[in-house]
Length: 126
Image (cartoon, rainbow, N blue to C red):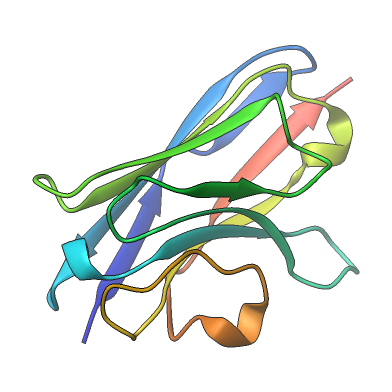
C-alpha cells in the first residue's frame, strides 16, 4: 500500500512558477510509475504528466508540454512537478498518483492509477 501526500501548491501570478512535491510512504516507491493529474472546478480530472518507475521516460499533456517538468527521486521516495510560465487556466487541484504494477511504464489514463494523494490547490491569477 502506497500513501501519497502532495505539497507546494499556492497562489501565483500568471507567468510565475511553482514546484509541487509528492511524498510517498509505504510500498516500494522506486518500482511504481507515477503521474500528476489536475481537476478544475466543474471539470473532469485530467492527465498532466507521468514518469516511468526509473524516471527514464516521461510524458506530458499537450497543454503543459514545454512549461512543466516531472521528475522523481527514488532515494527520497518523492516526485516533483516544476511548473513554469503558469497560466490562469492551470488553476486546479493537483493530484499525484501511482500505479500498482511493479516496474511499470508511464501511463495517461486515470484508470491506470491505483493510489492517489489528497491534492494540493494551485491558483494562478491573471
